Length: 457
Image (cartoon, rainbow, N blue to C red; front, side):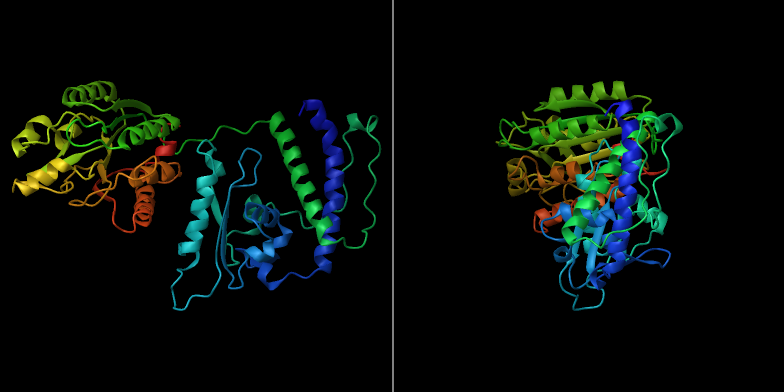
């Protein structure tokens, strides 16, 4: 839309908005609000869901009418992004059709499963590039909102309660634009089809006016949550010569590298590395990452433990005749790898407990090896995240990514602290694997919250 076009639009748009809203107000007065549609806001005031643009957004986000979406039980939740010109529209909706049979079976308020589900769906739909002020928020849970009317309007698009008439045109437009008719009477309430059409037209005009205003005065740049310097080393080993090929680590690593780069984090990507390449990658990363705030290490592939020490398996590690000494000499110990991460804050993601024929042989030969990875003790400022609990085996997955990496890729976009993100990752992996795999973390971070999606922006 051109600058001139937006100027000519605004008087007509405002007049139509005024007329339409008066009609809708009369319609609302003529048509009582169904008990299923009544909502209560944070200040105790009552409202009707159909009085807000949120009702139209909810009905268009899912098939079916609004009445059919809202369950008789009254247990439903809606999460949305703010209705601001710069914010992409994102909505999450979840409902429970029947009342719980036991007290506390569905949780309470924002902690209930359907509330968490609605918020998670909204965050998944919101692009990672959206500014921080566009974050999804839970606005309705079981017909209640914690937001006061003003804040609720920011998300729900509430129409003004009283609209008398459109303001007069600007002086410079008076000569060119015809006089705007005053709104002096209201016709009889229209049918439901006309109401829906008017609401859609109102939303369209509100968006056009908002875009015109934004074009004249762009919003100020959002303040980053915590601007830090960071670098990541991402390794994916799948083309093993003797341990059996793994289908996903290469794709897991490439997708994780792309995700971190999308956050503005510099990434060194290494694929199918033998021991020499692993050592070189760690040394190069150490040189580049010196004096940075945050170091990230992601590894996907085979990993094993010998004598309580965890090792990353290079693609040239042997399987036949393998011994604990061979692993110590040819693998890369996790503790040694940590020495190549010089930052005061270190994040390590290990999708490295996949079924390993070398481990099976070591265990069968009564070596000191054991399945999975061993528990680890990390210094303050270091967080080590395993794809599964120590001593357990992680799944490689049947899709493009392993269950653990798929969950990481889905949840890292959230504008939340990494500790919260990893709790969601754990829940997603357990659901995807039927509780066969439970991710686990060791160590602890210090200082303010650490949000990867907003780390360097």
